[in-house]
Image (cartoon, helix red, strand yellow):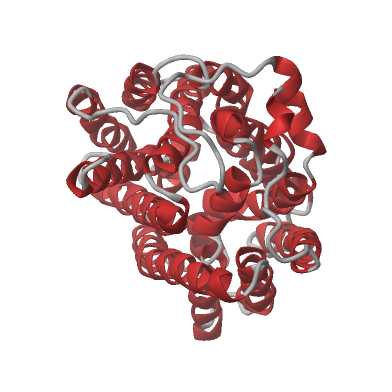
Length: 429
């Protein structure tokens, strides 16, 4: 029987690591203008810096998922933290575009290990009735870490330049690898699943079971909606400060601080409120998680459009804040739905499959697509118009999330009372 102390110590430490995971990822976005100027890059090349990170991230995720369902997760997570921290530090020493691309690839590889294995660790640590709230707290680190990345980058530009920003972002991770060794890894349990046997051995499902994940209806619909969601959020995360600088007329430091501040406040409260509300909704409706996902993105869509149309006005920035709050409401329940829709022994594999798909078909392409469309539609008399037009791709794609998650809610609500939301554990065999 786990002690309450060990449960929450694990949650606090893994959430703290997740904060640095996203800080290292998003510090680049706040440094775009000085990097572009010094290395003489186009918007398209800047977009590929994020896309290259995503390639390292999603291309190695299946490997870590495969290993994570077979090996101890703690050394794999430690490896990932060390590699992403080193890649971030080396980014600050890059003097050529090709070197910077290689460093961002390294950051993606390291973060893939953590993003695959940490949620599966938490799913084994907490029983079903507490799992969504635990994952909600874990994912609350996303807006905080992302905001700190923007704020740290903006501060670095004013106090030493963009290179020092990468050094400050990457160094703490090397110390956290040492602290990780004191954390106790949970057993691979079927926590909270009615009639499931508890096992202290590491499950070793085959590759056939991994491929059959995509035949699970709930898993597939969550994944399709999350892919469209990631496409939109990934591009806006990469281009947000630059959009505020170029279209809204804010200087870079102000844009970084505004975007980071709004992301921290709206993202944190949105993630926590959305996760806890989804838990309460689930007690009253079988499709509570899916209904929360659908409703939040549908409510956000008008604010996203208003933020893009009303460039340079108070209405634009207010709409941006509202949109960010609403778009962070689904952050915790997305992963809970993914993990609860698959056999327990395939949780790490399910996270790996999810990361591969949402980035391969989502935010791997979206920052570069926005950058390329911005370049193609550039107008010399109105230089901000190209980026503004390119960003309108994003609300159109968000509409697909509403469709897929709406279908998921309909499917779950029609399921007979007493039937598990997930599919049969027999898929492991």
